[in-house]
Length: 255
Figure 1: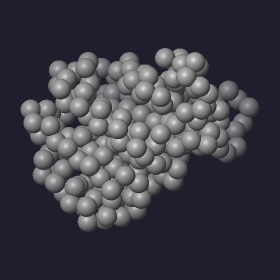
Figure 2: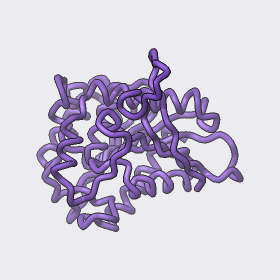
Figure 3: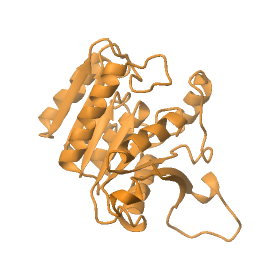
């Protein structure tokens, strides 16, 4: 699939002093598109990274959606700390440091910038619907965005931990559930500890109580990170089924 890195610029005054990365509030974003032979107008999917950043695996996930008729973009949400860190799966102290610096109000700002890019600055997606899918902390962010970011048409949450707690001053994403006006899919592992099966039950009850259109599934024998084939927790059967479900979700509500 044709792919490139786009630098998304935030609105506001900028001095002519070559600021970049976190200083200049530019957000590097991986973009993967269907082949030009497939046309010139496509729906979009925002792919929200795992806690390890926009890694090679996340690039492959974007390419997977592009192969199925979507322009897929993955913004580097750690850009306020580093322009585009790619962390190893064994670098948990660094992961915790970067993830601990995330703040919900800034995350919402980042997703809104990505939505604006797709609506107004990418000629292949302008005028089309936008879905969002997230993995690990990205699943939490997808849930937050579903409640907070106008312009989205559907969401898919993969094992989103910490939906029940805020990043920063709050409120937690779970508290915002009654603001969700789009369909939300959930893919979870029954062996996961964050979110635990009890957490998933709480999230599902809250979503159901808010009248949100949803479809949650928990996979026996699968744990956290089951979609990532670069991790020991990869579960091929769960990953393939969850992707098929998510693709069907987006085909119904976004394409």
